[in-house]
Each structure stands twice: as structure tokens, then as C-alpha cells.
Amino acid sequence: MTITLEDLLGIELPLIQAPMAGVQGSALAIAVCNAGGLGSLPCAMLTPDALRSELAAIADATPRPFNVNFFCHSPPIPDPQREAAWRASLAGYFREFGIDATTIPAGAGRNPFTAETADVIGAFRPPVVSFHFGLPSPELVARVKGWGARVLSSATTVAEARWLEAHGADIIIAQGYEAGGHRGMFLTDDLATQIGTLALVRQLVREVRVPVVAAGGIADSEGVAAALALGAAGVQVGTAYLLCPEATTSKVHRAELRKGASVTTALTNLFTGRPARGIVNRFMREQGPMSAITPAFPLATAAIAPLRAKAESAGSADFSPLWSGQNPGGCREISAAELTRALFRVSDRDRI
Image 1 (spheres, rainbow, N blue to C red):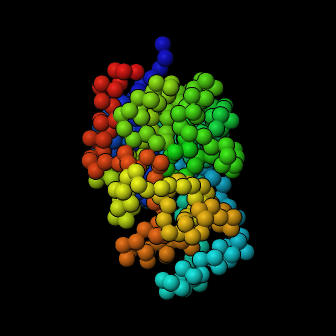
Image 2 (tube, helix red, strand yellow):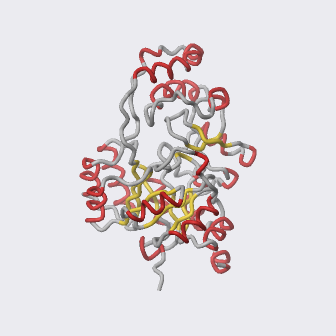
Image 3 (cartoon, rainbow, N blue to C red):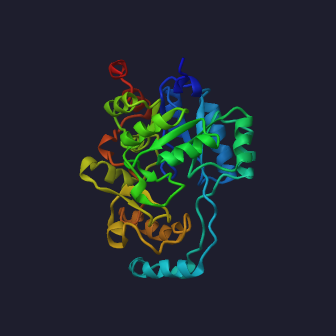
């Protein structure tokens, strides 16, 4: 008998809410958990104190399983010459907004999973821990599994899925080209290897033994049904939740998402130094969207931050990372609980 995703994760619906750093906190995760899905908390941008606070909030608000998500990148060695070239390319924007570039501090903004992070979350024993950009060291994977957690990670190719299975992933997220936010690619930086969600799901379910979860472009019950029909054990949905009241999506980001199918998305490395899908805005049109001079991930973020703050204070999304998948028309301004249930209408599940 095949073990279902619901059984593996202790959830009612085979749905994972995609962790979306910068546009959500514990409130969205709690709402999805209480509606029967697996709510997720993005942790890469949280300080240890903030992480403890968010985990405590989840533990207090729901008895159901939840997911904590971390990045697995190697911290880059700062390159002063590359940073200087990057800031020089932004000089015109700094002048436009009256920003003194010499006052902008360098900084990463996103932290990888470490032993110290494991110390913090170990006290809470989260039942699910997911990773982006591969997996941490075997020692850290073993430590996470030691308290009984299921380990998930994203694959964008067959090679990555095989690697994840061989290195301890219990469930693989098949992140299709349509998906919003950062690409989970970690064995290659060649964007030509990236394929659509349904094609990727079909390949992965044939190549690995662990359950495969479809992610990318899924925003309604019909999309869920299609993914399940192709063999996915469940789905991961992110963009569709961005207009829910529990999300912390900014006003300018919400305004762009409300344009629905009329918006265009593209992969860009301008905001962090690593390819991520977002709605095309002025900065992406004028600078790329892909640039060869951005500092290594996540160091590109620092120089953009004051431009974003100035623009957003004036009601502009010109310099904001407007992360979104290719199906923003699926965003709905309803509660996260309503959306979670709508993705799994009984009639759709019965068709599978």
C-alpha cells in the first residue's frame, strides 16, 4: 500500500503552502495548518530571536504539523571590485532618489541553515523542515531527522531529484519553471535546464522512489487535479496566497498582483544575485532582467534596499522584488483557509 503525503506529514489535504520570505510570517502558516494543509514559515531572513518568536506563535495557535524552511547556500566571499561595479551601475538611481551610496552598508540579508539554527529550532522540534538550494551537511540532516522531522527540498531537474533522494530527502518538491521566487537549482546555474512543472513532475515520479510534490503555476483546483493526475503526491502553492489578508504582501506588490493575467513575469538576479521569478518592473526592464555584474547571492540585496524603500514610500513598485509565479491571475482576496479549501473541492478530488 502506497503511503500518502497526508499520512507522511500528518495533514488532511495534500497541500503545502510555499514558504515566501518577505511576504509572510506565522499568521499565514497557522491559517493553512488549521485549514488542513501544511503551513510553512520562511526562516532565512529571521534573526534567532525572531525565529523563536514565530515558532512560539505557531505552537500556541495550532496543534497541527507545520513546516520551517531554510536556505542552504554557501555564504559568499565579498568581492569589493564586483560590489563597486554593481553600485556604479546603480549610481543614476541613487542620484534620482538623493541617496548617498557611501552610507549603504554591505550585508547578506539571508542566512543559510547552520548548527546554531538547529539549536534554535530543536527546542520546538518542528515536524517538517524544508530546504532550498539542496540540503545542509549530512550531520545537520541527521540532526533534523533525529527529532523525527520529515526533510523536504526542491529539485528543478532529474539530476537534482536523484541527488536529494540519495542524500536523505523524504519528499521532493518539483519546482517548475513557472514558480515564483528563487529557483531552487543547486547542481547547475544553467537556466536552459529549467522546465515546466507538469513535465518535471512526470519525469521525477518515474525517477525517484520518494513522493514528489508539484510546485509552480498551480493556483486553482483544476491545476491541483492536473498535478495529481500526473502522479504528484501533492502540490505546493505560493503565489495564490499573496492577496490573502494573512499574508504581509506590501501595498505596491498587492496592486501589481491585482492586475492578474495582464502582468508579465521574468527570472531576474537583480534583487539578490540569484535567479528568481517576479513581476517585471522598471528596474528589471532597465537593468536586465539578468545581469552579469550582480554580487553573489545574497549580497546584491544591500544596494537595492534603499532604492526600494524610497520608491515604496512614494507608492511605486519600480525597485521592489515582486515575486510571483506565472499564474498571478489565480490570486484571490479571500482568507487563507477559504483558499486552501477551494483548492481541494471534493468534486475535483473525486475525478482523480
